[in-house]
Length: 299
Image: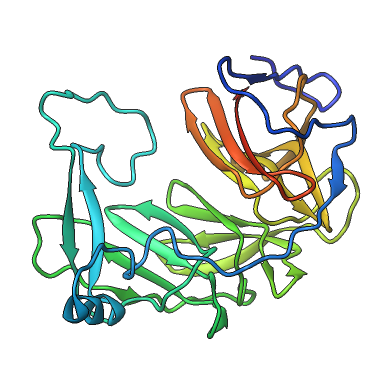
C-alpha cells in the first residue's frame, strides 16, 4: 500500500472474479449525468423493522415498541475492528428486541453509528414528515429489560439541520457527518459530533471548490480505515461519481486518491471494510440501472 500526494498515490481498485458488471460500462470521466429521481424508502434500522403477524402486533410495531436484532456472538458494540468467532458456538437466530420509550418516527435514508454500546440514529426522510433533523439513541444490551429510546438534545452554534442521504462515521468519541441533502439542496459542510457533549461543529466548508477537497454529494459511501475516513462515489451535482477521497482525521486534511482500474460511476451502493480493504457492491449506474458487480479497494 502506498499513500502520499494525489499525484503519487497508487491505490488500486480490483473487480472480484466471478461477478459480472451490469450491462453499462464506464467511460473515462469521473462524473456522469444522473437521471435518478429519489423516492422515500424504508429505514435500515427502525422500530418498524420487525416481522409481524396479525393486526394487534402490527399496531404495536407502528407504535414504535420493537427493534429486530440477530444474535451471532457479535463483537463488542462500538468496536470497529475485526473479531474472530467460533462458528460452532454462535446462535444464528433472530429475536425480537423489546424496547420502551418514544421511538424515532419512521424514516429512510438516515445515518447511524454505534458508540459505547449505544446505537445512534440521525436524520433521514419520511414521505409525510419530510426531511428530519432529530437524533435518537438506544442502549444495546440484550440482557437488559429497560432498553429505552431517548432523543438527544443536540448542541452547537452550527448544526446540520434537516438532512438525509448522508453518512456518519465514528472515530473515537467523535462522529463525522459528510454529504447529504435536504429536498435537493446539498449539504456543503462537513461536521464533527462530540458524542459525550452532544455538540456539533463545522470542520470543513466544501462550498469552496478549490480541488483540494471533495465536492459535496449524497448516496456515497464512507468507511473508517485506521485514522482515515475513505469516501467513494455518490451523486455529485446531478452526476454519478467514482472518485476516492481520504479524510485524515488527526490532521484535518483531505487527500484525493488517484486509483487505477476504478469501478464504474455509481451511487446508493452497499459498502464495508475489512482490514485494509474496502468492498463495494451494486448500486445505481449513470442511467439509474441497478448494478450487481463487486469491487475491492486496497487502501
